[in-house]
Length: 607
Image (cartoon, rainbow, N blue to C red; front, side):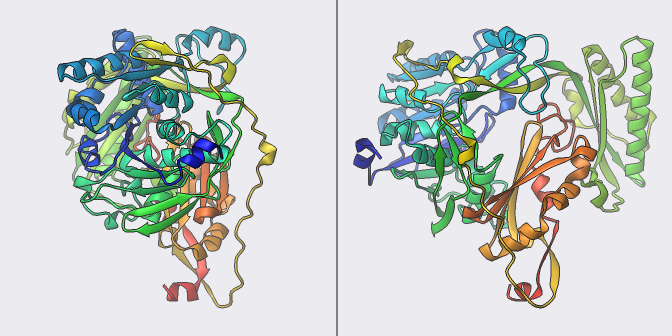
């Protein structure tokens, strides 16, 4: 630990997680501004799907490439207070045009008589390298496919040190493009505490704090397993991290707000969208989450500590977005007796009819079709209950390379109300476009020496030499042993996992993860014994893209008494293109929480 870090002992940096996505709630900022001593607001705007949206916006208007909502809704009304109180803002809301958004912020500031110093971090846009990378044979890091032909918006994930440089130069706000989400919080901590590029454990701890804050109210009771215990969703408080120089953080929320900060809510967020918890790779460090502890230290106050860090890898992750054809979606309400059967026949008839119409026009077949009757537990596969609902919603999805084909389907699906099942109605979706473009995604790796982060303050470039140096050695990772079952006598009984654990799931492109956290440490060995790789694979088998070759991994996370499950090629192509009702894999934990776990009967009798 360097002199700067030792000098920061006792200092607390308060950071508010003000947004988990570009469409997050407008209630976040005014509530966070009630927090005494707040130092920073961090806004995460760039889920991978958002990059495709921003790319289309910039193609239509080169001056665009970002959402003005960031100014109009999230920070614009509060600029004077932010400036007066010295609360600094870090946001990746710049999308594909950080300087364009920065200038809009400066303009709004001038209109209010404020002199706002706004920095930008650029260099993530590496689209110019696409021809060279294609020639070099770059392949998708998940499915091994080559880069698609045509234009690709390609961005590298940058780290936290450029953000720290901008703050050191006096920026009131730092606007970035594609940086790794947790860097929005790690950057301020590097600046405030003087952490260096080789302080790996501290950088990993700051990444943990960032990971907990980056998704907004998901850390304060949003999407929590025990949703009944979370008060006042309408006024849910967004998270505040009280960050310390030793890397520990106390997670809390503004006084008087709804929501809940507990071991369960924080542990769920800790494992949310995590792959290998011992190799959580960000540009500045490789993090090991397995020793992280989560401790309730007061009402709505949870202390998190214990992250371990390794030197970073020699590569940066790439995310590419490209045009991938067209889609039309039908949502058709069907009511009355035999509603589900009528809906299924409607789907068959519409696909048969429109397929014939395509052939008559020599447009070829549908590239993909998908139908499901919402309300009949289609996603539960072999475990679906035998239901006889009298109202269902039929969803049909078709993809084609020709937008005219999707427009044709969009028109024809509306005719079901007149010439198909009795009880058929029409949904408001009729007002939506009958065809819309699809955004494909590709992920890869690029040598970090081919990407140069650049830092600007009010349009002037600052000197910046990234201090991060590669050195990760996977052989340094020592896997923890799975917890051993204690000796027991007496009978075993089956209980659903939800009685023993919290769980949260989320998509990561073509795969999803499920973090499972034991409600009590003594439950973990029994959970681990029942949730074997084979058993969980079979539980999810019908959801894999290729059920016969399903691939699933399970990692032990002993620090918070948890396991992390990673299901590969199980997302129907990923959130941007999956036709499923749950394209974001938010329900995968709900599926798993019904899985039976064998435990001693005496344990249940003791509560």
